[in-house]
Image 1 (cartoon, rainbow, N blue to C red):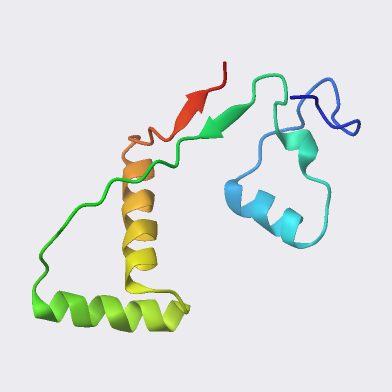
Image 2 (cartoon, rainbow, N blue to C red):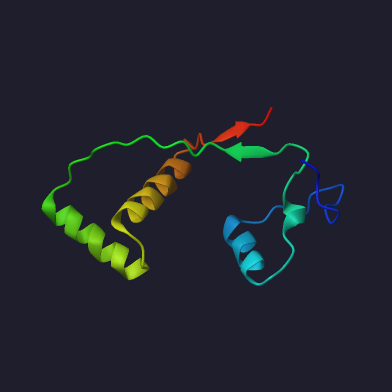
Length: 97
């Protein structure tokens, strides 16, 4: 993968993901925050699992999902991803060969 012309030789000072999101949403060029010399592809293969939840939990999930304008499934995925990342167990990225 070729780096965009706007990429500088050195990466800028590290910023939080929230700050990167804000800058991107504000239309700023954030390509300099990525190391284009080692591209990685997200492993998005899905595996279906079944989980039984108590009725109260399903109702609470639905309330929280509605507040955010997402589906129950999307909410569960977001929350689980947040917890796994916080625990240092994010294994989704794989090296491109």
